[in-house]
Length: 422
Ligand code: DLL
Image 1 (cartoon, rainbow, N blue to C red):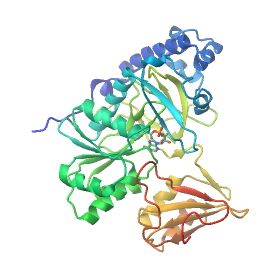
Image 2: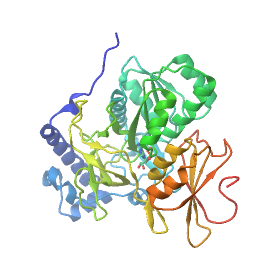
Image 3: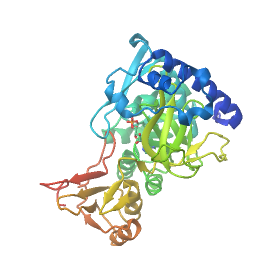
Image 4: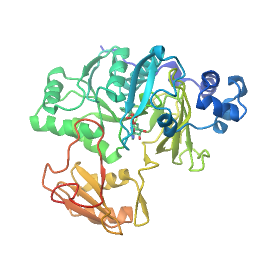
């Protein structure tokens, strides 16, 4: 009989116990930043903080922010708080705007990251008897190696598939009968369709899908295709990688590992928003190589301190609603790509692309898909408050992303259409 794994003490402790732990960790972090003497240390001094003893947990909202710009300004290694010889790995993200963001890890950071990813896998019901089919990309991207190390830390069996070569992935899903699948939600659709077309029977119980925004509607699609519980996993390279927050099998918000990563949700003026109200997520990470105080993620979500039936007392974040910088403003109407996806998937197959046609003074929203119900166009107009053109293209026209993050929105400024036959 397989042993059942559950949340550890740090995930179920009382809020008071956790606050005491957080305060200690925040003070240690402030001490390290002040000692490292970089830009964060200088900013702390400029607000009168000379060491950890000067700060209480309640002071966090008054401490200075860190931004992606700070990382770029000090590229590649200017934010290091340890000597380079203590750095054992470098990872990063290609960044949606083309500039790489690099992050460094000490051995201790890798251990922390592995235990956070092990927690994520336990959230999905995994344990040492699990076989984890890991189809996140291996390399500089944190998805592949992060989950890999987490699965090993848990004592599970990891199958390091990386992305792509879908036929081979389907073969190993059939032969090794993994119970856990980890990949981007868009690749989960691709794998599910390929497995269905190959007529194989799957043994999957749960999947951890993240690294790109996805809707409840896509969850329904993935669960139908793969016959598993589709769970959301969130993280970013700057904080640690995947494993910052994960849904449990209740599928009602992502448990933030706030014993290590302090989280805040802020309004555009940088003030805390009440629980349940969307705000920009700001994280403080104690990682040794590159500690970050109040890092502005640009990701929009709400927080909830309500206890979860699973027993975890960690604060939960909603699914990411969008990014501060990916809100589309079309003829004065604000819309997030995820809202478009939610409508599209009710009327069309999961392969779609949003095209912002900016060739004329008045931009137009085009939703390109394959196989769509006639109800899609009125539903988009009605629910988004914005008229859209729906184009149904021949099957196979919308690009399938096999490696990396799906690009759901493209802009058409001039010249040829971004998709054939548009
Ligand atoms: O995407 C880390 C990761 C890998 C998370 C695998 C989950 C699974 P980056 O490449 O640095 O790191 O990109 C981070 O991706 O700021 C969000 O905008 C977005 N993102 C990550 N997870 C989610 C998610 C990895 N579950 C950026 N939902 C973040 C929505 C997500 N967006």
